Each structure stands twice: as structure tokens, then as C-alpha cells.
Amino acid sequence: MMYKRWLGGILGISAAKKIALEELAGHAGEVYRMGENNLKKINFLTEKECDILIEGKKENPAQLEEEQEKKGIAFVTFREKVYPQMLKYIYQAPYGLYYRGNLPEGTSRTVAIVGARNCSEYGRSVAKNTAYMLAKSGVGVISGMALGIDGAAQAGALQAQGATYGVLGCGVDICYPKQNQSLYEKIPEKGGIISEYRPGTTPRPVFFPCRNRIISGMADIVIVVEARKKSGSLITADFALEQGKEIYAVPGRLGDKLSEGANHLIWQGAGVFLGVEELLKEMNILTDRKEESSKKIGKTLENLERLVYSCVDLTPRNLEELMRNTGLSLGELIQTLNTLREMGFISEVYKNYFIRTDITV
Image (cartoon, rainbow, N blue to C red; front, side, top):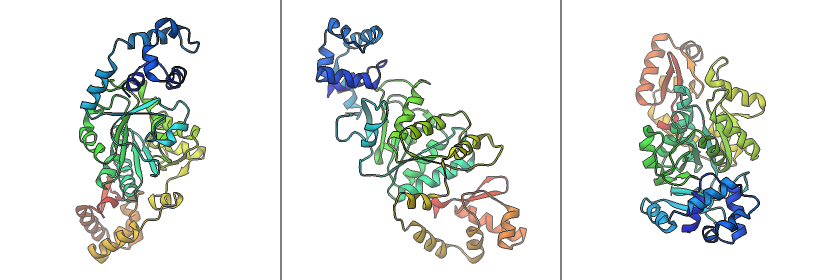
């Protein structure tokens, strides 16, 4: 395995060429031992790639493996059973994956939730609530551990004690961004931190579009919560489309920059995300979460609180709309909303706009 770790960590040679090299030599160890003249005879390697391999041979594979294992970093190649099965069949499948914690199991259902880093509070709530409810139903949540939507989704899955997997655009021994240190430490307990880049690799802009193919490749379904017209989330959606995955987008307000990407995906034919219950039906996953949630609400809320709560969902509702739907006066409504907010059942995402916060139910 030490030679496979070594080959997997060579930057500047594509995954496809690494796979071809191993097949040609018979083993990664033979690639390491191959002489300079023999390397230069391989017709699919460029001169620059030969130089990269020759330079890479200055490293000690046994020492690399020892250092990585001390950090709790495992490695798996595409030929092994624990390698995520869905990932094997994508274009430019990674030669190998470095990871802390675990990899998604082949029998488990997974959903990728991605979106804007500078997201709205509404988008953050949708991502977190959706991930929480999916995780409660046994669905693994995959994302990029970025600020905003990604981090919110993975926090929601962790809060549900579910499995979540963060795919990084750097080595798995580097927490990026640093603001998500808490997520970085907790994710391996239930899921895993994953990267195709060797430990010690610092984040670079070019790495993130590449890692997005892994996020979509390991998922059954991709949900885009909020995204601008040109964003990494849409790159993930493009990869998902190429890989034959189902794509859902959360519809947003017209004219909102953060909604342009998701709305455009819907215009192109992506599914409209209507909530977790509908998604679980599409995935043929039965859940009694809704029934249990209703029982808890019935025991906890008074009549007026239950009435107002029933008129709030994951689409922001304003005071005028809630007054119309509940028949309450402005004073009664505001008092009841404040009570629900203090109890954690709802949150105010814009001034006088409220959404349901299902994860506290």
C-alpha cells in the first residue's frame, strides 16, 4: 500500500494516467522502481510528466505511509472494495482517496447539498434543516465543508447524529476553511474527511472544481440550495448531469443574485426541491419522522402557537401573509411568533419574514 500512497500523491499526473501506469507496470511498486529510460518510453506520458515521476522517486514511500498513519489518515485505491462504488464509474475517477474517519458504504443512500459561501440566513436554514432530516432518515450527507451552505448542511447532519462526508480541495490533514475547525474535528466521528490530494497539500483554486466531481460522484442526488450564476455549485451540478445523477434546486426570489443559479437550473430542467418528505418518497425511503414530529408539536404547543406554526414552512412567510392565514390580530401574531422563536420552532430570516426550524422539533 505504501507505493500506492506514493503514486496517489503525485501531483501533475491525471488519475487516468496513474491507473494506466499501474496497469502497465502491474503494481505501483514497479512504477516506483521503473528506470528513467523505461519511463520515457511510455507513449502516454509527456516529458514533463516523466520528470515529475523521476523527481517523486526521491521520496521514501515507507516514510510517507508511516507519517500518514500516525495522523490517522487511511488510503484506498479504485481497485479496493471500500472505494465508493459510484465513484468508480465517473469520468476521471480518482486513482485513490486519502481519508480520516470512514468512506460512504456502497449500500447507503447519499445526498450532496451544495451552495453559496455568502449565503442568506434562509439558505443556511434550508441547508441545515434538510441535512438534519435526511440524516435522521439514514441518508448520508456529502458536501465540501465550505463556509455557508456546505458547512450548514454538514452541521445539520451532525446534529442529527448522522453520517456526513466532507470532500476537500487540499490534504485531509489541513482544515480549510479554518472557521470550520469544529466541523473538521467532528465529521470523522460519524462520517469522513476525504481528498484525492496527498496530506500536506495546501488549498489552491484549481483544486476545488476538481473535487466537485467527487462530491457529485459519491451522491445519489445533488441539491443546490443557493448559487450565483457563475459558481462552484453549478460546476458540481454540471458534473452531476454528466454522471447521470438527479439534480434538485431550491427555488429563490426573482432578482435575488443568490437565487439566479438555482433558478436557472430549474429552467434547464432540474427538479424543484419541495422538501425532504417529497425527496424521501422519490428515493423510496419510508420515514415516520413527520408523524413523530406532529406528536411532539401537539404535546408542546398551545392552540394559538400550533395554529401559527402550521402556517409557517421552509418558504419565508411575512406578517401580512400570516395574519391573513391565521385570522389573528397583529399583536396576537407577533406575541405568538416571539414565543415560537424563543422555543426554537421558527426563525426570522429577513425583517418580518419567518421560516420553520424543524431540527428543534
